[in-house]
Image (tube, rainbow, N blue to C red; front, side, top):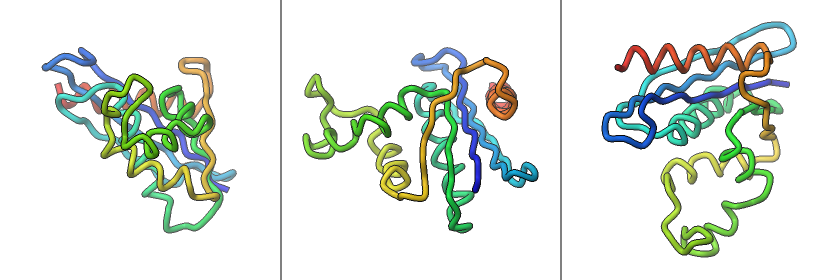
Length: 148
C-alpha cells in the first residue's frame, strides 16, 4: 500500500502575476520513499493541486500497488467522489453552467487514475496537523517561493 500526499500553493491566485508550487510525497508503512516539488509560473491554485496529484500518481504508477491519494483539494476529491468528470465528458467538457471545464487538459490526465481501481482519492483537512499533508504544504510553498 502506498499513501500519496499532494498539495499545491499559489501567490496572487488568478492574477497575471500568479506563481504556483506543487508537491507530493509517497509513503509506505515503513518510510517516505519518493518526493518531488516544483513551481509553475502564471498558475492558479487548482492547476497546482492538479499538477501535484498527476505527478505523484505518475511517480508511483510503475509500482503497481494500491495507492491512496490524500489531498486537501475539494476540487479534486469531489470530482473523484461525485463523478463530476463523467458529466463533463458526456456534456462535451462543459460544466453545469454550460461553460468549458477549466483545466480540461489536466483533468484528462488525472481521470486515468480516477478510473484505475488501484487508486483511491480522499480529502484531508488543510493545516490540521496531519504530518505528511503539512510537509507537502511546506514543500509546495517553498517551491512557489523559488519561482517568485
